[in-house]
Image 1 (tube, rainbow, N blue to C red):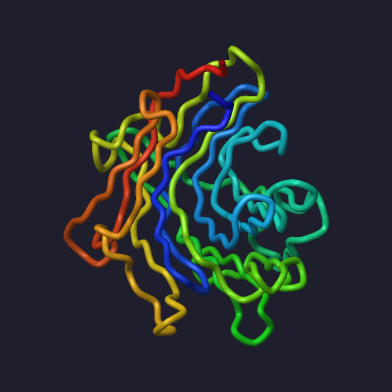
Image 2 (tube, helix red, strand yellow):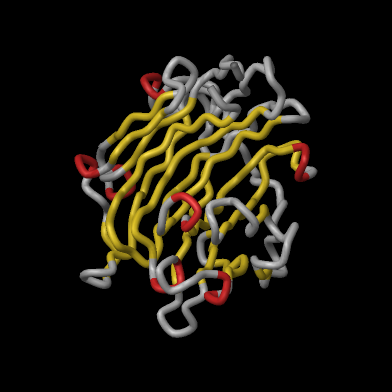
Length: 251
């Protein structure tokens, strides 16, 4: 087992971006760990993988001891290109109101008030740049020039929503994901992403992916899980609950 654990939903369809309301939590982590929730879009596989993601993260290595805004990108399957935030050249910050690293506040409480980031990632149809927005505020963009024509330069082939945690040290117990509770506990107790939408390349419109078409992945199901959810109202027409208490170790 590696130190990386995820619980995500995938929608496999050509697209120009995605949106989702990412429930905000503040899971505790050790200095060698992180815990995050995000949307990411991808094209290609293995060393040709091109990926961008954005959401909130708790990561002491990023000086992020509480949940804050983050981005990540790679153009070669995490080999030589890419980084978090602006650690390397790539993502261009434009907002003077919300910088990467800004605390994601307020945070949700178990069986209490729930808060979320209304996150948007989309490709501009003129410049080809990929933009990250929180609600209506453009945070910044990844230039089209970072990516090649078989990759994100001309759209994405799949979208993911959900959570991920990481522990670098062997025998380190993996941290909480989301609220630290399994999806079966439901609203106000388990972490969620609702309002799932994609910008469909074929019809060039924003649409909610049918829940039946979402593929669910949890590589450590004893520690973390993911489930689809539908309910009353547009925001709950396509949604997931995810997360768990952790406790997995690297073997």
